[in-house]
Length: 472
Image (cartoon, rainbow, N blue to C red; front, top):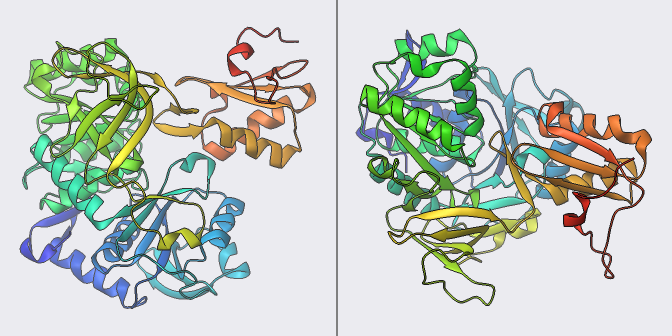
């Protein structure tokens, strides 16, 4: 991937309406970064949607260096926990951020632009499998050291499939409306740069006028967002303005309310644009399904069909394939974009392909008579809020670790997380802790005080009983 020589003087990155980087210039920057590494090893990149972070990532992929992509806002204790678990050789971060790393762990190596390269005291601490290309977090909002191991084949396959079904061409212009350390945001960058199409790099929020001024002045043709993004666009009355350059809007990261799907489908129909609903997971590199625009009105609520070269199917509780429409089962996927598996520590980096092209998503679904799939629920204990996947079990464990709590339970949906405690005095501290940890607004969390957490004879929490439990 990223053989930029074939695009030479075409624009690769747009930093402002007057500042642009060609593919040739980007190639030179990537080569310069690699000169400070000069070997296949593990690095951590603390990401913002800026040239330094993106060039670091591209340099790693082009030169067979394995990056871990993390949000630059990650707390120092969580970052140091990951550093201890994986022992990376280098850390790339913004020059004015995480200065404590230099004092406690790392030594300064080199500056490039507004980013710096820090050398850790480790050197090739763990063996790295030849196929391993990238590590992405499954739940970056809680800073878990659990990562998805993605291969070069995974990246190439999913990038190719997305380019094909979205019909991305070199004249398209994307904008970084999502973080690059998020699998969806990264896929937007991968597909456009691989196709020779430019990306507008910005950290500006879509709630700011500057974002839309940049959007229109740079002629952005494709826009991507999670459900929360489109809820905010509705508040901004986005559909009342055409944005002439825009040709396509994509949505993933959770279920979008049907009334909003209809709103944006109507908008696109009026202005000859397309609105594409998609479904994916980090474990499948990015995308597994999409809803063709021409079918959208007739298939409201559907995640659509499998991406090119992939297969979706359902399994019942006995592990047999569901062949009848309208029958619920666990959604499974086969394809070259299915990740190698998980990593929990650096010792896992030597592992090969544990998944062998098959992913059991943990989501429950059914398909209709036309073969279009519909998500009906979740088998695993995680929720997606504002596009951020939050593992409820991890929330419980982190609260137990930091507050020495034994009686605690977390439940939730795609709107709220509810925390049940037997110690009422900790209510405000607990909600504040999770808000800071996940970077989610405090209003997302509701804390309820209860006499006891209901459990079965094996000691497992009976989450379904919590909803009806009398609170103090």
